[in-house]
Image (tube, rainbow, N blue to C red; front, side):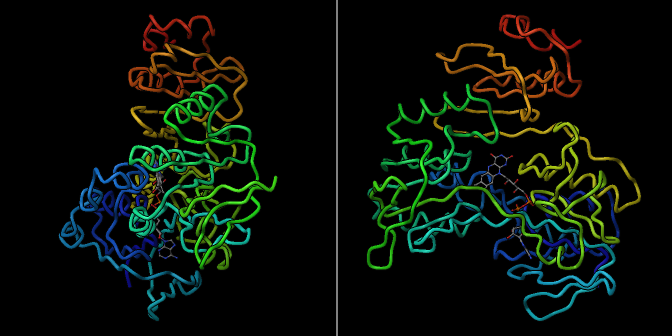
Length: 406
Ligand code: FAD
């Protein structure tokens, strides 16, 4: 028995355990995860870990001894298979049953897989875990071309790193532009040009027929128009599927992830959820129920859950932020641009330092800042307050955003 059992030893789960001990939580805590490694940061997997600039030990969220010192029981290489909310127990893949006082679901998601033929061939990779990236790195030396499927952040970051490592890269995106799900057209076009100028063969509006096979391994991708692209490595970056099946089977309300209220409580008694797997009504999405896949959300929801578990109910209301590194471009985003009806560009695209401000009904809802940390820092207050500002004023990059806060 543990007072708190956290399922998923990723960002959200580990930050929750840390936050509980920081707040002097005295009860027993188990942190159960199906990966073999202690909690580590995922963002470098498609950045400095893939490029070889950071070794794995530098990705650890805390040194290994931390967990024992703080009396957090790490149960690694074990999967939670089923929950019995009435008995308050968890069935674990090693055959054990763990009983809990409070259960917290922090399982993130599984990489979405292609469904076409060849999707499971050797040479087809996801970029979600350390194991994924280690497998990919091991195969790289014999690869003559990498084909990245999906022009989202992870696919584009991987493309940038592999290009820098000297590999020819093709990026295939189904939509008519990259980053279509998360950004406006200006940003998409900017990144498309950037990748092409680095030699990436970037194609949008393409649909994939299958992965071609040779001797049991991938040898290329066949498109719906009949053309083929040869390449021994296929990286699939087409999003995640929230890992919530056991909770949903146990009766938790769900909709693209497990549904949680403003305190991260699921519809099951004493069961919480947070991080990538938790669908919540977000003020910055105009109240829509969404999942946020970001370190910010994992950390801030961990604080919300830690407080709630200690009887202090404070609604989750953090301003979303995110970053992405590609080549020498540092993108920092604040707010959520979904549903924008106007955009303003501040700064100089040609100088590769600019921001795109997103407005909805004249209110600032988000900023995408490229090599423009000042706007990112100062824009937060505009997003948090939903400032009403004229596009002409916003476009004047000689005026710092902090001077525009109403
Ligand atoms: P995770 O960190 O995925 O942790 C969930 C853990 O639970 C995993 O270890 C999983 O294996 C485990 N698990 C799942 N099911 C079970 C089960 N039944 N039993 C036991 N364990 C289970 N965010 C940013 O803000 N900025 C970035 O630049 C950025 N870059 C990224 C790059 C990559 C390559 C990836 C993959 C993600 C990136 N993210 C980035 C997103 C960020 O890493 C996630 O939002 C964050 O890790 C979410 O934390 P989480 O704890 O919800 O999920």
